[in-house]
Image (tube, rainbow, N blue to C red; front, side, top):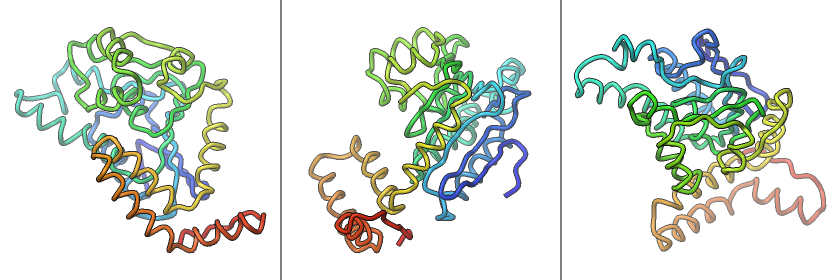
Length: 267
């Protein structure tokens, strides 16, 4: 696939999506960027050759979020009447939200710099987050007199305790990677020049697992907060009944008993 605003690299069952517009702060509110993210992630999801997706930004910025100049000019998705802006959000940046929430790929945000507003939310939409020490996070919406219109507060409230989420949303303050780690916003913090190597290592470890088990494990985690325990137990049993019939499960059991590395084929 050819892209202008993002870059996708494939390394075995791991893909790396890089926001590739550093001159504009790797913003994600433009239709062309949204289209490419949707097309890129959708292609990886449907292709069946990818288990893990790393999301990062080019140069010193992860993503500055929305285009503030377009907000000032009331252009693009920020143009029109209240009803039109409502529809603009649903038809533009919220497509990324729905996409990231729906994908079965395990997603890792490698936050290499500033993750502001919708950029912070994009990181929160990922299953795992690794931050460079120079990373900066901010729920900056309130500073601009708006709310997280991309739905990012839904993810933030599930990533950290509500009182922590409330402080970040109500103050719009900027925190560094170490602070994000202490608050539980990220899984780990690494030296700036080690970020992608660490993300690749974690992604490779995860991608070495049976693909079907990974995808269904993610679905289980996502359903856990949505359904009753009784329904969740039924879903768990249904997934398990399927996985017990896979070649990868049989291989995993045989490899464990025979004390050898397993060789999974995605079947």
